[in-house]
Image 1 (tube, rainbow, N blue to C red):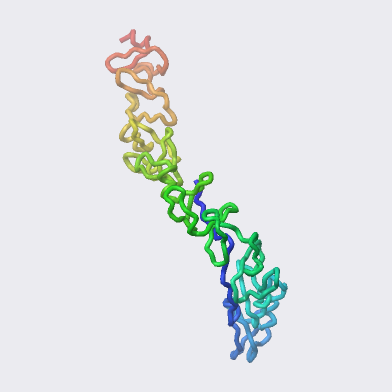
Image 2 (tube, rainbow, N blue to C red; image 1 turned 30 degrees about the horizontal axis):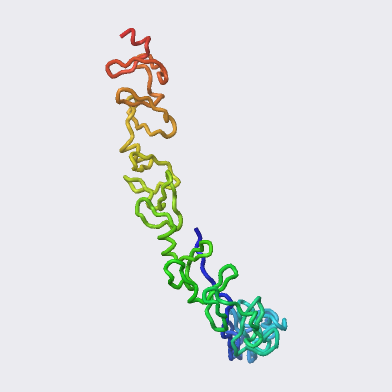
Length: 309
């Protein structure tokens, strides 16, 4: 069962240049006696750039620290205005429509297939249509995309309750989409104990679904998922609680008969029970499991010893 988070389709964003340049470093003139972090030349009285806690000269910043412009492939110096979109960087003068080369530093644009396009160059065929209302999705619209299909944000609704899903979590079912609430009520399995929907991490025992937190020992509330347990009359017990409170005691050794490990085979007779290895002749101690025996005065004897009683 998977939650799917819808993403924005053609991300149409205002992208403005920053008058002060990139915001992750500081440019100034050094008044104190400080050396460049890279070339070790003195910065006193010179222009410097501070980035990541280090001071460096402008030349070293351009060589070692500056981002590279996607368009011209040159460093974006500390004096330049930098634009960024999805971890890509441009000089403000290089941020242009790839078709008509119109500058877009202060205008809306369409980003498609890692290309920047102005609104005028976006042809009718370039613009997708909403699967919900079949109208064109234009610059500035908030959109949702799933497996190549796109909707206006307000057109992406639950197939059952018709409420807007938008960019929230949803469950796809064929051609339909369901919000979390409707999916739980229509499709999700419900826990036998609490009757609430199981959205993840559930377990199944004898074809019945449980939350892992609900499948616990009836006595000590220990979680039983992935652990050994015993079911008695629709009640579930961990090994320790079964031994201490439920299991029958062996008439021979007086210890619990758990059915786990050694002694998993049990001999029962006249309302009493024994581990198979405890079921032996009272007199000669020969094991009588799966053999003929004589029960006399609450004791077990082999046929030979019984004759001597």
